[in-house]
Length: 255
Ligand SMILES: NC(=O)c1ccc[n+]([C@@H]2O[C@H](COP(=O)([O-])OP(=O)(O)OC[C@H]3O[C@@H](n4cnc5c(N)ncnc54)[C@H](O)[C@@H]3O)[C@@H](O)[C@H]2O)c1
Image 1: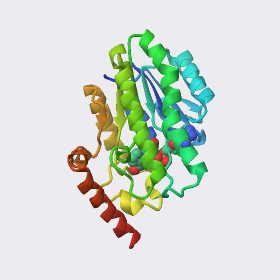
Image 2: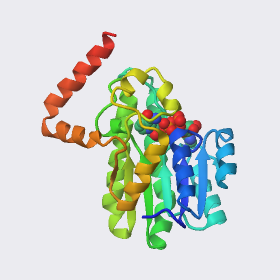
Image 3: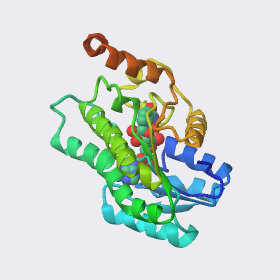
Image 4: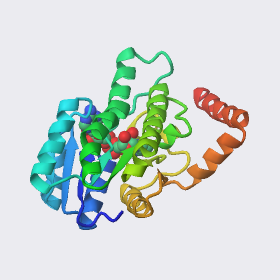
C-alpha cells in the first residue's frame, strides 16, 4: 500500500519512532496524519511542522482510542492506516513487580487490541485498511534483561499474526515492526550496552524500511535484516540458540 492520499494514525508519536513515521507519512503525501501520545507537549512541534492533528491519548484506555478514532475520522475521513506504536521498556526477571507486568501488558498488547477493535469494522466496510503494529525483535527473539518486555512483545507479534489470519481475506493488511536498537529516548536506559550490541538504526532509516515494506505488504518489517537470519537460527536449533543467549546473559551479569 502507498501512503499517498491515505489517512494515517500513529500512536507513541511524541517519541522517536512514532515521530519519524509520522514525518515520513506526511512526506509521502498522506491526506491526514493524526498523532497520539500520552505526552501532549511532545507532539506540539511535529503537529505544527507537518499539519497533523495531535490528540492526547493513553493507549491503555479503550475510551481514549475510540475518541482518537472518532476525532481523526471527523477531521480527515475513514482511517486507512493505524500504526499502534506506543511502548515502554522496563527491565527485570520474573521478580518484576506485578504493576510492571500489568503496565507492559496493557500498553504492548491491550493497546493493539483496542486499536484493532476500533478500526477494523470501518476498514472492512470501506474495503480494506492497514494495521502496522510495533513490537520489537525481542518479540521474535528475546531481550536478555527484560522478561516483561520479551513476553509482552511476543504477545504483540502473536496478536498481529492472529489479525492477519482472521482478517486478511477481508482486506485487512497487517505488518509487525520488529527492530533491534533504534536511536530514540528508549535507548538511554540501563540496557543500552546490550541493546546496541548489534548496531543502531536511525529513526529515519527505520521509517524508510517501514514505507518500503508497506509497499510490498510483507508481514515482518525488519529494519535490521539480520533478524531474519536469527529467527532461522532459533527455529533451526532451539537449544543451541537458547545456550547462546544464555551465555550472552551470563557475560552481562558478570559485568
Ligand atoms: N528504540 C528502540 O531501540 C526500539 C527497539 C524495538 C522496538 N521499539 C518499540 O518502538 C516503539 C516506540 O519506541 P521509541 O523507541 O520511539 O521510544 P520513545 O520512548 O522515544 O517513544 C515512546 C512513546 O510512547 C509514548 N507512550 C508510552 N506509554 C503510552 C501510553 N500508555 N499511551 C500513549 N503513548 C504512550 C511515550 O510518551 C513516548 O512518546 C515502542 O513500542 C518500543 O517498544 C523500540
